[in-house]
Length: 73
Image (cartoon, rainbow, N blue to C red; front, side, top):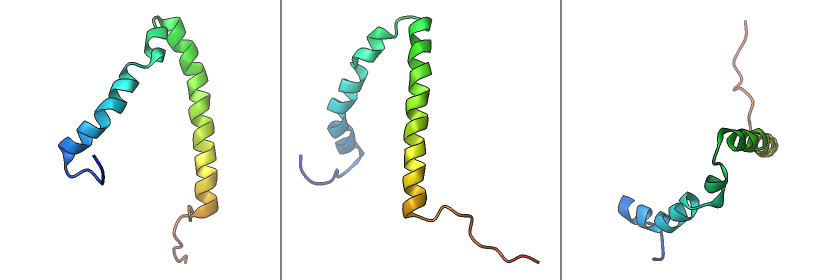
């Protein structure tokens, strides 16, 4: 399969191997109880926050993130 996907079924077919890899990821077997899930989430929330902080810094550097100007008075 080369080139862009032609339809939704083509997209699903191309994504199927990646989806299968994600569904079989070892993290799911290690999160076998509430304590393990809690520990994972305690760390994951910081990873997401850090990523979003970096992403927003890049966004504000390269694009306009200000509210559009509006007249006053």
